[in-house]
Length: 205
Image (cartoon, rainbow, N blue to C red; front, side, top):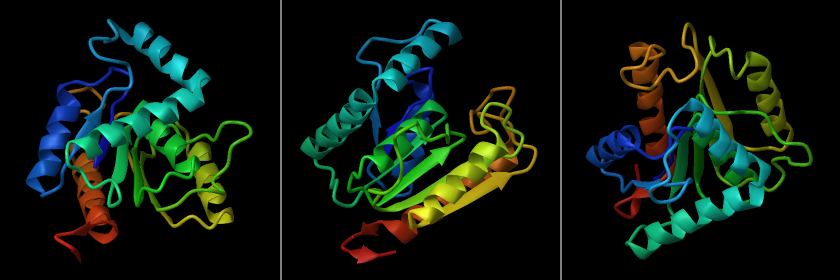
C-alpha cells in the first residue's frame, strides 16, 4: 500500500495509518511528495507546496512513480499494490489513476475530486474507491457527482461512499473536523476493499 499525505506533508498521521495497515498484514510505504526535510510551517505554506505540484502534474506523477520504485527496491510487490491518499493525497492518487498506472486500486479519503482540463479516466486501470464527507465544504457533492459520472462513462470499476455529517478531513485524529463514526466506517470499508482487490499469500482474500 502506497500512502500519500495531505498538505501538511509526511508526518505522524501517515505513520500511524501505515502502522494500522501493517497490523492488517499489509506492507505500507508512505511517500514524501515535498522532499526530505521540507515541511510547511503553516497552512499558507502548505497550500504553496501543493500548488507547485498542481501546476506540474507530470512531476506529481513522477514523484508517485519514484515512491513505488523505492518501495519495490525495499522488497514490495508493486504488481500487487494500491495507493491511498488524504485530502491533497487523494487528489494525487486520482492523478496517478488517470495516468494509466498499473496499480490494482486507488483510494481517496476526503480528497480533491475535480478532473483537470484536458484529462480524463480513459486509461485508468484498477478499481477506484472514493470515501467522502457529505458535509465537506471544500470538495462539494457536485464534485462527487461529477466524478461518478466520469468514472461511469469511462467504464472504470468504482465505488463511492459519502458520510452524512462528515466535514472535510473527517479522518484526521484530534482535529476539530474528526468524526469517529465516519472514520471507523470508511477505514473498515477501505480494509475490505483491499481484501477484495489485492492478492495476499499467493491467494485471493
